[in-house]
Image (cartoon, rainbow, N blue to C red; front, side, top):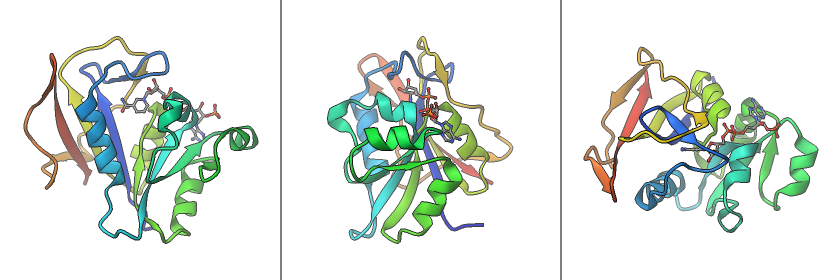
Length: 185
Ligand SMILES: NC(=O)c1ccc[n+]([C@@H]2O[C@H](COP(=O)([O-])OP(=O)(O)OC[C@H]3O[C@@H](n4cnc5c(N)ncnc54)[C@H](OP(=O)(O)O)[C@@H]3O)[C@@H](O)[C@H]2O)c1
């Protein structure tokens, strides 16, 4: 098995929805800040983290925020040439998760790898032998969604406490949520 561990990170509501109409169903500033901190933080200041996303998720990121700063952005698509022509320099376009992992393993500047969605990318990453942890923000409310987080097999993923991740209930406006971490066993 290759050394690259995949960390998945997502926010899902009660019905496991993650998106609607190509955007997030909620606006949660502190949750977004958590995503940024988790995916950007490195122990070695000479390194950066990689974020792997599907082409639709890339399209969903507002222009002013993409590529996601201080991270190597990797976009997965079946239409390599078309997407390569659309993305700015420095964004890596790959035909699948294994190709992305292979690319990361040849790049010794990458510290951690984060899979940031959407649905089908989470699913292949969760089923991949390199999958390590799932960082799932569980929002205590239902939203109308058209995109969903895949089912987590609780026999293979156990809830753990992680240092640095608050186990306390988070509240923003009238929405509450928990930062959960599931580890593959
Ligand atoms: N709440 C959250 O944490 C969260 C996180 C991420 C996204 N979202 C939301 O989720 C929605 C977007 O997600 P989505 O599930 O619709 O789309 P997505 O997974 O981001 O992108 C789907 C596209 O990725 C490419 N792709 C998928 N699997 C691939 C594979 N195995 N190999 C190569 N390319 C592959 C294909 O691109 P081509 O069509 O170009 O071939 C496919 O059409 C938005 O609403 C977004 O806001 C929410």
